[in-house]
Image (tube, rainbow, N blue to C red; front, side, top):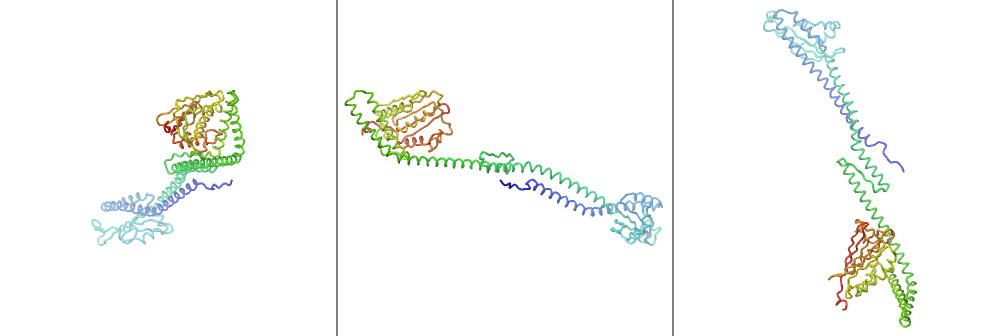
Length: 500
């Protein structure tokens, strides 16, 4: 059989999809952090420049009034030790450097740095981002107005100098960018971890139940109608498994129904074949049978007149009765699905019971392991109205079932009880045989259904039809290994009605 399974399973697809989504989110977050790092670097540098400027402004006003210029230089040198600070400078009103910290000497040697800061000096508070081949920094300029005590030395000047603070933007940006990169790698590693955990959860919560359903479907394709899927997830997969199980049950029932119908069709076909065969040979059977019956009748008349041996007469009566029964069986075999309800008569119950007793003892109960008892409490005036042959067939069928239900290793007891009330004649047949399972009781009257391996399934269906044709009822009570009780009620025919 060709393997049609996909090369990539659902778990890999879902895991890859989630992983790609997590990586995409990590890249988006990382890109955002890198972009925001530039802006954050400027904000940090600006705040830092403002803070240094305020410290120097306060110290400058105080120390200049006291004449302690060296203290100002010391303060600037101390502030300049910060790694993010490139330089602190004070320009006079002619844009000449009045004060620089020692760290600036290397910049002056190259002249690139000093040229850039001098070129951008303004006599107002200004922030400028300066970027050259070797430098990338934020320059803050804060002018000093001539006011208060300053006018003693600078009488005619409005601006006496400018403070310049330069913050290394490149270093701050590298620091913030490093944090952004760390965040990216944390997100990336987390993506792998989350994808692995989600893959495991997907396998447990989704893939395994789907595999159970897939396996169930594979079993179903192999005509295994006993397959069941057990999923207890409390979600749509559990509902899907439940629906699958219900579908399998429905298919199983349908398959059994089709199988039973197929068997019934085969059985019916066999019965039709038998019926056709019986019809074709019935003429050949009836001719010699009629000859036997006529000859027996003649012999019986002769014996009545000339032979005193009662035993011989009894044998002749048995021959005539059995020949008549053979004739009736042939007729019923040809017409087992249509009963001759038109040939009805008043049936004397006492005579009927005697006939059943003779037949049963001779045919059914001629072996030692079954005791047959007849308990008949009826008078000569009790009648029912119907087809005598059908009634006899009905009772004989049930008695035959009773005998066949008794195991060979068990002492059997079959009781045939007959009594009547104001409305009905009641026939009760009890046995101590194997019994019928409770779940089979509803099926025993169905055509072609039989609890016996060699049964035709027509016996009890015919019995029920005979009972219903005589406006009667039938009830069966059975317990496994204890026996079966069959009760049949046929409406009574009053003595007056019988005579009429």
